[in-house]
Image (cartoon, rainbow, N blue to C red; front, side):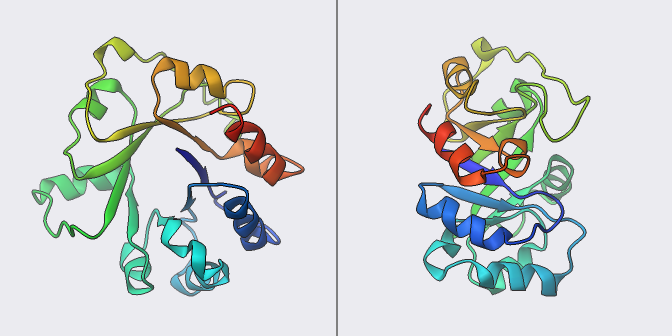
Length: 193
């Protein structure tokens, strides 16, 4: 599985790039723009070709995404813990849920309604200077339906290593948005999966 996460700021021509990424074989695109208002997010979503919208994931403003027909939502670690306190109320079987974790133990304890989880940082971050790789004990990884997606410092040079560690896929952020050619960068990573 190959996922791209948006930068927190809007980029010129970003939705054009998103459409090109999907045409080049991207599986999912996470919209992570915490400072954006609902109108900005709505305009962004509507600028993505309709054939790809089912592969968009909203990291916040979940109700907006669902009202626009999106079926995928992501919960940060903090938001997931808040939701857990309500005993997972309002789980919709037609919605695909994902989340973020920072340890193998956290991943192993996730309920089965999460389709996949990001585990980070795998390598030193490209987009966040000083956010350094952590070592994860894959011998503790339980076999389960929830896919484990590597995040943090992933680029073409280390994609194969991430998969060999035991990840079911990778997520890209800095490798895309710090690149002069995001589509080529994504294709290079895809070729290593």
